[in-house]
Amino acid sequence: MMNTKKTIAAFSIAVLAIAIVAGNAMATADQKNASTTHPMVQNHQYNGIGQGVSEMMKGVGNRSGDQVAKLQAMIKQLQDQLTKLQNGGTNSSATTTTDATALGCVKTAVTTREGTIATAFDTLTGCQKTAFAARKTALETAWGIAINKDRNAAINTAWQAFDKTEKECRDAYRKADKAAWDAFKTATKSCNVSNFEGFREGRDFNF
Image 1 (cartoon, rainbow, N blue to C red):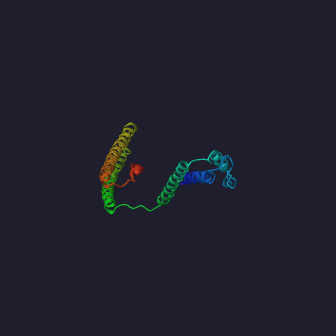
Image 2: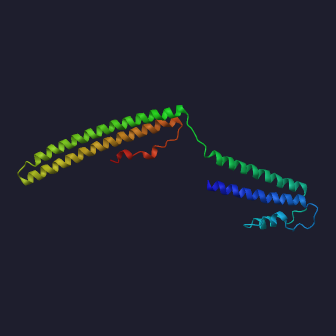
Image 3: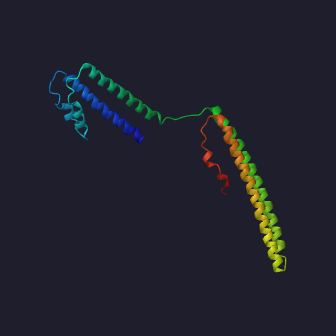
């Protein structure tokens, strides 16, 4: 928005400068002394604008009608561009909508994806519960062994078995989750709707 305002301001200054030059050319077409500063410039010499316009006006007094016409055409072109910028700034804040059919297409894909992920998560938690139960039983048995060496070996075996099973549970879930997202992205390509969910892929692993 700030850049647009700056651009509009720049065009406004340019239109003012050329308008003054054109006006001076028409008003002093028969005068020989073309270096005289126009009164309009004297009244608008701020921020260096008046001085710049004054330099532009030197030698303009005897310009031909064709040259004046060219300046007027430049003014019209700049004014048209300024109007487009102003209209563009207004339209940029307008509310946009998406076709209901396209939204329904994405909604169906989302429903499928979320259902698949939910099922995969249920499978993950069930797998982990089984792993925890097996670890509990193995450790209870290990702590019933009186011989230290045998007990320590049994404890290590219990934990190793748990780690292996739990990793397999997570790996299976990650694969299912990725497959769900891949299917979602493929399905929504035909919906012609911008996907604002893609960067959230992978958040399902943060638990």
